[in-house]
Image (cartoon, rainbow, N blue to C red; front, side):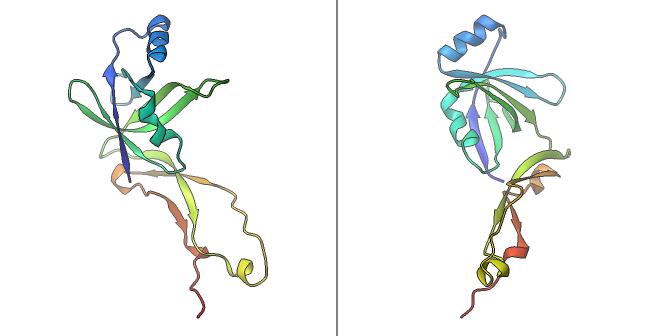
Length: 153
C-alpha cells in the first residue's frame, strides 16, 4: 500500500486558544491514538491534500520534530461546515503484528458480458469495502474479477 509522509510538531498546549492560533497560522491540530498514550501534534494543512482529496487509500508516516517516525492510518477528519477547511484530524497507530480495519476503494476492470452484448447498465453498489488485515497485507484497491473479460479479436 502506498504511504504519504506528513511532517508534524508536538503540541504542548491543547486548549481552545492554542488550537485557534494553530488554525490561523495554517496548521491543523492532530491526535494520534493507539499504543497507550495519545500524542497531540500539528501539521501544515497543505500536507493533507494528497491524503484527503483522493479516492485512493493510503497509509501515513508521521515524522515529528524530534526525528521519530510513526506509521498510522487516517481514522477521522473534521471539516468546517461553511468553507470546508480541515479543522481536526485523528490518526490510528499501526503495529506490524496487529490487524487494522480500513476502507479500500473498489475498482471495476473491463465490462460484464450483459453490458457489452445486451446493452445493460452496470451499477456499482459500494465504492469502498471495509477490510481488516495486517498492515503488510493491506491492498491498494479491491478489483472485482468477475467483470474481467478478454477482448474479442
